[in-house]
Each structure stands twice: as C-alpha cells, then as structure tokens.
Image (cartoon, rainbow, N blue to C red):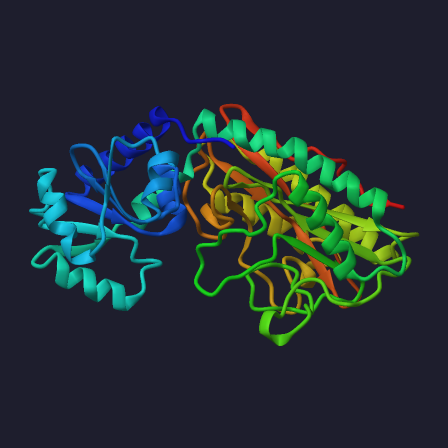
Length: 392
C-alpha cells in the first residue's frame, strides 16, 4: 500500500494556489473523492479547504482516524456538523472569503445551495477547471505508479491469452480477468467524472455483441440488464470472431487504459483490415504527438486516415461516432486533455493520455488502445503488450 508523500501533496497544493491567486479566488472547498485523494491522499468523508495563501485544512466527518493515518497534511481536524465549518476555518485564520471555489461540475445543486447559505456573502465560483488543470500534468511520483501498473497489466493480457476458450461466455471471461486482477491488487471499481457515466473496469465483448450504449465509448455491448446496459453478456464466445478486451489495471488509485483484440481462429477480412487501419492511425498519431501540439490535431489526423479507408462510417463507434479518439487519464478515466476535434490544449510533458482508434461493425469491434506519457521528445508507450491481433 502506497501513501502519497507530504512533499507531493505540498507541490499539488502550491500549483492550485498559484491558479487561485491568478483568478482572484480566495480559496477552494474540495469534497469530491478523486480530488480529495489527489490533494490529501485519503478519500474519507471530509471537506478540504485550500486557501489562496497558507496551509490547507482537512475537516473530517468519517473516518477521522483513517484520515489521520492516510494523509500527510499537517492540519486535519474532526468536523461533526457542517454548520461549524466556518467557525473552525476562522480558528485557522480563514473564513473571510469574498470569492470561494467549489467543484461545480460535480457538486449536486442541493449541496451548492447549502454551501451558498453557509458561506454567504461569499461569491461561489467554479474551481473545477483549475483543479483539473493541476491534475492534468503528472509528477514523477505519479508516473512511477503508472509504470508499475503497466507491468501487472501486461500479465493480465497474457492471462487472457492463456485462458480464453471457445464456448465460454463473455461473462465467464470477464469474471476470470477480474478475479486474477483482484489477486494482483486491482481495486474493483473505476472513477469517472462525467455525469451518469458508469463503466465496468473490464469491457469484454465478442462478435455481434457490439450494441451501442449510453457510455462515451466506441463499443457498448448488451450487458446483462437494461439497468446497466453495456459490456459482457451471456453470449458464448465463438470461433472466427473478435474478442474485444478493453481493460486497465488500477494501482494505488491510478488507471491505465488498454485494448487488445483476441480471436480463436481467423478474423473475417474486413475486420482484420479495419484492425490494420486502427494500428496505422495509432502509429501516425504517435509520430505526430509532440509537446506544444494542440490535442485536436491528433483527432483530425485520425479522422483523415479513417476517412480515406473503406471503414470511415465505422470509426469511433457505429451507428453514432464519438467526437474524440483519446483522453487524459489518471485518478479518473476521463481526465484532461480531450483528444478531440477543436480542443486546443497543447500537449505538455508529464501528461498521461490514452489513444484509442477503434472500428465498430454489426459483426464485431476491433481496435487498439495504449496509454502514453508525453515526454520532451514525444510519446512514451506505457502499455507495451503485443499490438497484433492475438490469434489463439
């Protein structure tokens, strides 16, 4: 078990404080679990106050004991009643806020109204873009976790090759991947920031199980119920069809993202050719990606290559395509930057991104996805498992 070092937390807080000062925001109150973990090293039920100047204060409801054990912050106090928050903050010299930031992209309206009353007459503003910008560029500490996760992730994909059998259901394959991963330390769930977006950590679909779904992904899957309509079903895995495995190991809170295609037998020509096009797109994006390049340029390149292929209508989803071909990744699956048309955020060393050119057809989904670290000279591939179709 890895605990976030105090020096790491201090650097993250300092980066956010610089942005708060630049935007003339007096402080921010953080309550969302992913952001709490990033700035405190714990996800206990709490409020984190980061002033524009000064030390942060973590006010914990439950569990105070675990928060003290897990977080390296200096000022951690018990807060039984939300009404007492302002009085506690004033004890630390904070509280006369004129402008106060909250994570308005995820904060429920009823809580927003409660905080608005509690901190009146302070003006409440959206601090989520600033928080996400800080999280967008990873530190050496974070990159080490990604690289450690990648070693385990490669073992998982090898495990799939060793245990995939004709006739087993998608659910069975999904289950044995998850069981193996849990023994390796996989957390069992994935954090996603987007509203009403849920996703299994392991996405397994085969053959014609390419049903579209509500999730922002190129491949949906029928799932087992309309209550969670995506992913693996009870469909038996057959011969000569793609088995699409979209999976990423989660280590110490950080998510990898990787997709590989398996096949028992041989793929139909159009699927094999579309897979080749996906690999070509990936390699061309790898060549183009350099610090300073607007992220949207990678999407435009991918769209151009896919559009020149016979499979243009099936790129990034069928019948409804996505408007992106990659995304930032970290504590949440859908971090910044977005690799989509019109996004001008430049690539920057320390970003971690997933690139995922995929094609979806009525009789199968094919494609490839890797996680990369942006370096001074380009992209470093973290997920290095064999990029060919895994024929069995």
